[in-house]
Amino acid sequence: MAIRVMLVDDQALLRTGFRMVLAAQPDMEVVAEAGDGAEAIEILRSTAVDVVLMDVRMPRMDGVEATRHICTQPDAPKVLILTTFDLDEYAFSGLRAGAGGFLLKDVPPAELLAAIRSVHSGDAVVAPSTTRRLLDRFSSMLPSARSEPRHESFGRLTEREREVMLLVAQGLSNGEIAGRLVLSEATVKTHVGRILTKLGLRDRVQVVVLAYETGLVRAGGGPAGRPFGP
Image 1 (spheres, rainbow, N blue to C red):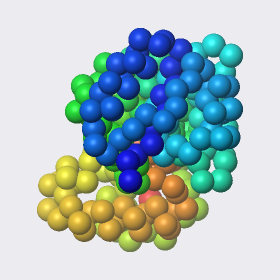
Image 2 (tube, rainbow, N blue to C red):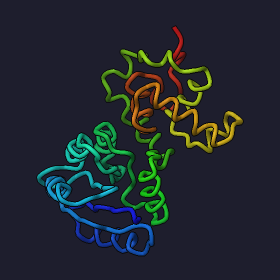
Image 3 (cartoon, one colour):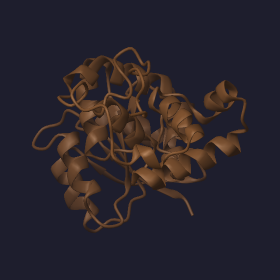
Image 4 (cartoon, helix red, strand yellow):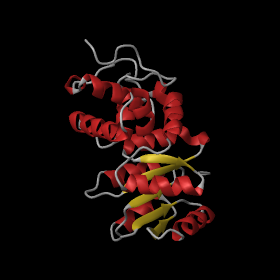
C-alpha cells in the first residue's frame, strides 16, 4: 500500500513542487494538503495519513504547535518538520513536540523521498549530521542541559548499549556507529531497539533530545565527561 502523505505549508508553490516529486513515486501518494497547522489538524480528523510533511512558520497555528497536537492523538501519523537554517530553533522545538525528524526546505528530491520512507518504516533519524549541527547550536537553550546530567534509566543499559547511545546522541547513523565500534549494522540496530525499550523512548530522535536535555552530550557534539557512571 502506498505511503499516504499530507503536505502542510502556507506556500502553495512549495506544496506543488513536493507533490510533483511524490506523485512520481509508485509507493507514495499525496492524500491531503493544508496551508497551516489548524487546517492540518482539521483535515486529519477525517483523512487517513501516514506521514505529515510539516512546515514550521505558518499563520494561525505554526508547525510546532500542530505537531504537538498531532503527536498526542492515538494512531498519530509520523511528522517530518521542514526548516531552514534561519529557523533551527523551531525545528528543535518540533522534535521535542514529537516529530520524527526534520528536513531542510531545499532538500534534494532523493533525500526527501528517503526520509519519508525512513520515517514511515519507524527509523526516525533524518540527516544525522544536520541533526547534530542543529542540536549543537541550540542545546545551550535547554535549562537542564548543565544542571542534571543523569537519567534514572541509564543504569539499565549495558556498557555496549551506553556506547551506542552516546554515538546515537552525537547524530551518527547505524552505519557510522557500526564502523566506529566494529559491529554489523544489524547488531547496532538491535542495540538501538533495546536502548529505546529500556529508556521508554519512542525513537532515535528522542534519544538525541534526551542526551542534550540531561547533558550527556554538550554543544559541539562531544560527550560531557562521564555521563553514565556514579
